Image (cartoon, rainbow, N blue to C red):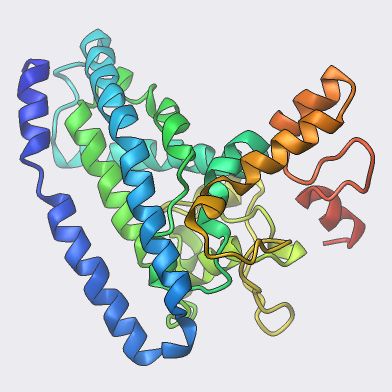
Length: 298
């Protein structure tokens, strides 16, 4: 197949047309059961962030699809790994592994955090919050998937799996589902695990970066159990921005980075404000998540 053939197939993909109505119907159902978990202006910002991220992602997505195609053409496994059932299972693991590191570094590198932070800026946990996507992260996102087409997975398969992952992740943004049976909680990302991820409690900061499989967090030391009786999740940021201005929601952390870079004199400090973890400072208390947890013996 040529690049044109793949693009033609991509244009005929109906996954998005299926997903959006399901998302909005699910939000309406959740609202009927938990009106108190929604706030009109907050949900409005979430919907705007969805639109903003789609606009920003448009060109990077096209560039990534083309790059995936040419990397796939270079793969020695091209034509060997097809679209058999087992190939989809292998791709699920590869895609989810890529997502884990993309998501984790969005929390551990401040420049990436600036692009991801809108997703965490809501103090509410509901299905609407799932649509509050990070805007700036759309620019660097696809670099984390560049190795996968070299394994023989074609770009259309990859984009399909990425879409399936995002649909799955939509449904973990809720408080209506308590903990699921232990085997499911052990293997999969669940609403319980993702409530931890959105919590600003020190115990939970920068934990549970999973997309579909929570096994990566368990393997790489970023897993935290939801302990509602001991430490009920409090949603939002460690310092909330308290604004419904969509432009500020999308850009406030970039402005904060720029402010910190300007006040630092040493080049190494300037670079640390850009590339170190959020909470690092050259002249004050270290408020990085790992440092705070260590001080509290968590």
